[in-house]
Length: 331
Image 1 (cartoon, rainbow, N blue to C red):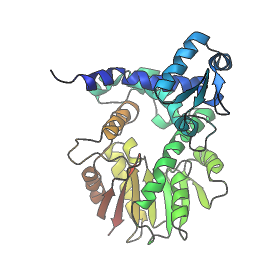
Image 2 (tube, rainbow, N blue to C red):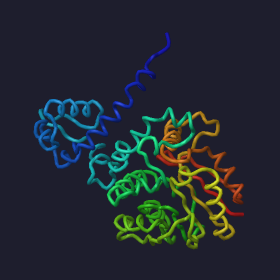
Image 3 (cartoon, rainbow, N blue to C red):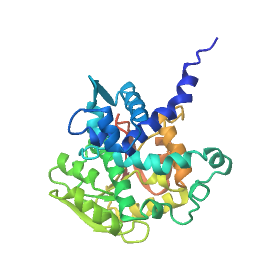
């Protein structure tokens, strides 16, 4: 008889995710950030039923997110670093976004597969540009950017280290959000000028995250406005949002703005060229289906788009971080 373990594991996989989502949403990890507390105290602080709160806490212990200390519970090192909202490396924003936005969208994955389109209208009754929904209020915009920032802190140091970028003098991160990639580039390449180019509302949030750094903040829309001068542009988790016609438009615009020998650094999770993995990239590709018009791609697929836009040399690196790196050079 075949091993049923993979199937059984997947049957309950969403339950593990939802347990973490719920504990974070209720503030469990924030309540324990200052030190251990007993279950009834946590239930009172989170305004939950003591018995069911204890079941949630024990489940988090089983998942390795909490530890038992006698009658008290404490954050694990992982929870303290990534689930406590006050941590500089927190992923709480993206987890809350996953719970509030992505979880309902994924409930309509079957229809997304049948129709080949995102699920915003079906799930929320919303039309219009997708990112207007991410940025519908200052609070939701900051929460979304905070989530992207957490992933950026994990990925950007590896992305800027994937290639030797010392030949470049000025990097502009297009749609760079909170500036984590330029901050990482500035730390690694001492003489490099760095900047973020993003929508005015996003730049307002970016000031919070780049204070004290040498990152220049520039307001604009990379689809509409002229691009700031640079010999190296970056696109981090941008191309996977869009359809190929929009990608071609953007890549052609970037190519035209670069000097000869200039580069484009892309941070995305790469599919294997035979499309056999990795699992994370395929899950993200389905995620882009339900919430955008985009998808994940292999290095070969990115190379085709880049060479069509006029780039010459194209190289890719699997970084071991949540995002991989592609570097394209203008001939």
